Image 1: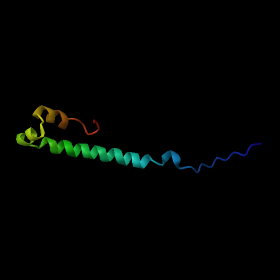
Image 2: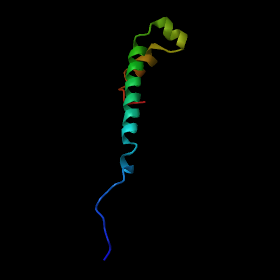
Image 3: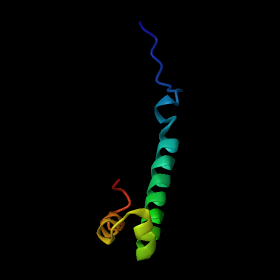
Image 4: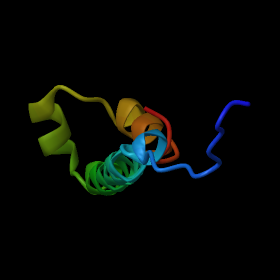
Length: 67
């Protein structure tokens, strides 16, 4: 008869899970912050950056999870 062990010792399936979630949340926070800041820029600064008000409104209106 085969000796089967039901004790699971490998942590490999969850090894990168925390890091992956941490990176995702960090990206979401950065996007939200960048979009809030972008929405506060004045016309002169937007012109210097080569952006239109429509482009800024479109980008600032995106939810944080969208790229």
